[in-house]
Image 1: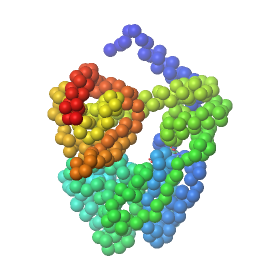
Image 2: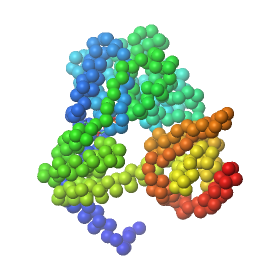
Image 3: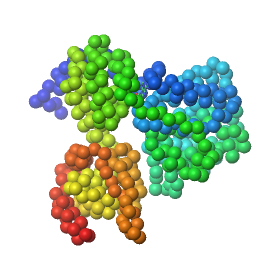
Image 4: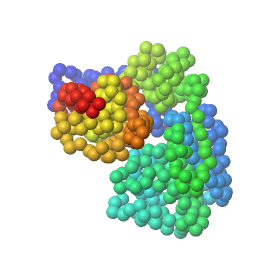
Length: 423
Ligand SMILES: Nc1ncnc2c1ncn2[C@@H]1O[C@H](COP(=O)(O)OP(=O)(O)OP(=O)(O)O)[C@@H](O)[C@H]1O
C-alpha cells in the first residue's frame, strides 16, 4: 500500500545522501576482527605458545579462557586460529582448529555441529548423544589429525527438558575424557566463558580430568578503554571528526554505566551516524539513549511469551516494592496467565527453565534466601535494569505480539489481597 501522507522515497533518499562522519562502519561491528588486540599481547602470546607446542606433538593440557564480557577473549582466540591455520598449512602439519560458539545450542546440537565441522556425515535428527559421541570416537580413532576444539560461551549452552545433567558439565566431561575411549592422546580442548564463577560451576568429577590451564582476561581500565576506542575511531570515522575529549567522555559513560567495549562501539556508530561535523557530548548522549532503548527492546523481544510474563511479574513486584521471591513471582505470573486465558506452566518449569533463561541474558539476577529453620529455601530475583522501563517495554512487546493492549489492570488489587491473605 502506498502511504500518501509521507514521502517514503524522500526519507530513504535523505538518509542515503546524508553526510555523516562514519567512513568505515564495518570496523565497529562485532564481526570485524582487528589485526591486533591492544593490551592483550601476553594473553595472545600464551595461547599461540600453547597451540605451537601442540602442533609440535606435545599435548600441553587443556585451556580455560575466562574473564568479563568484551575483554577480547573471542577475538584473541580468532587471531590465533587464523595464524595457526596458516602455519600448519605452510608447514604441512596435520592439525586443524574447530571453533564452535555454544550460545543457544544444546549439548546435542553442539556435538552435531562439531561432527559436521569435522566433515562427518551425521543426521541432524533421529539419533542421540550416545551415537554422536560414538561417531566422534570412531573418527578420532581412525584419524591421524591433531585437532583443537574451541568451545566459546560454554556457560550459554541451552538446557532442554531431556537433560539430566548440566549441559556445560556434560560437554567438558565428555571432551576431556575422549583419550580414554580412543586409546591415544585426545584433542586439545579450549573452553571460553565470561562467567565470574565459571571454575566453581564445573563439577569436581569433571575438573579432576579436565584440569585446564586457566587464562584470565582482566577488565580494561579507563586509559586502556580510551586507547582502544580511539584506535578504532581512527579507522572508522573521518579524520578530524572527533577529539580525545569526546572519546574520554564515552569511556566515562562506559565506566559509569558498568558497560563494556561492545556497548561503546555501538554508541560510537550511532553517534557518528547522527552528525556530519564533529562528535560532541550531546550527540553521544542522544546516541546512548537510542542504543539503550534498542538493546533492551531486542533483548526483551528474544523471550517467549511465558518468559515475558515472568519478567513482567518480577518487574511488577519490584515496582510495587514487593520482594520478588519465587512464590510471589509465580503467583503473579499465574494471575496474568488467567487474565490472558493461558494455561500457566508449572512452578518447576518456571524455576528450572524460564527464570534461568531470563538470567542468562542478563535481565535479572537471583540469590538464595532461607525461609527460616526447617522451612527450606527460596530465590529472590532482582532486575538489572530500571523496573519501570522493563515493565513498559515488556508491555509494548506483548501488546505487539498479542495484537491487543497488554495491560493487566486487575493484577495489582488481586495481588495485594493474595499477599495479605498469605501473611
Ligand atoms: N584489546 C583490544 N583491542 C582492540 N579491540 C578489542 C580489544 N578487546 C576487545 N576488543 C573488541 O571488543 C569487542 C568484544 O571483544 P570479544 O568479542 O573478543 O570479547 P569477549 O571477551 O569474547 O566477550 P564475551 O565474553 O562477551 O563473549 C570486539 O569487537 C573486539 O574486537
